[in-house]
Length: 299
Image 1 (tube, rainbow, N blue to C red):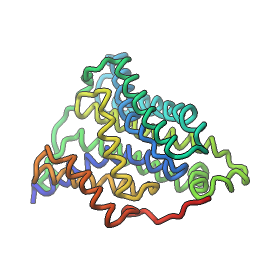
Image 2 (cartoon, one colour):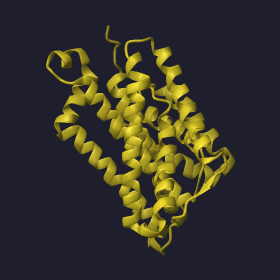
Image 3 (tube, rainbow, N blue to C red):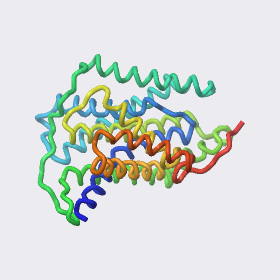
Image 4 (cartoon, rainbow, N blue to C red):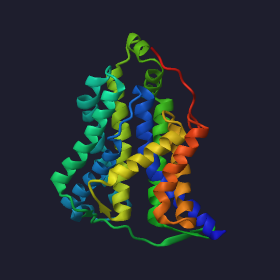
């Protein structure tokens, strides 16, 4: 029983990383029906932004939870701004173009971010100067580190804040309205471009926060680290119902739990095979995802 609970907590911890990235996929797709395949690389850029802050101000920041939050806020601002720039330069001019053109542009943006970071920081992995330390806590027989608890708590707070913003604020109402009918929103005086830019900022900022947490927890980062987690986060968004924010979180939790149990009972080398194989099997049964709804194409 203790082993089962340990696997559950491990799955929830990994799922929290996936959820922060998956939310960006769902937000952008829900509003402009764009699969932003460069989104995983914003996670990577966030990790390198945090690494830069650590390299410049390691002595002043010190360690601890407050330092982690400060680094995360800087990285979120940097990746959020980069997401807005990406939307403005790469996606907005193609908003009325065929979807294949936009998809190819997203792939090109992904490679540009990856190899731009490789040129700037070098191709070799970088070591985070801020390690995680602290004791462990026994919860229902499972051993959890304080670092895991703190990072999971931060991820949950960010997810709740986003959900509150989307459901309770004027910007959130505008996002939901544009997802239903952007042309009607224009006629009602809504600044659609501004709302879409804010959507990219929020989604990119969450991905940047996840990148910092991954760098701090795992200790190493590299310019290709966003590729796999980008696919995993996209998988989570599809499992939950892409375009549905709560569905993205649910899909990330499901994927994290599946990986945790598959590694324990099948083997770590089967982690990705099991995850993507489950996606294929799941979509044959429920193509709209757990919380997704069948929609018709507007013309």
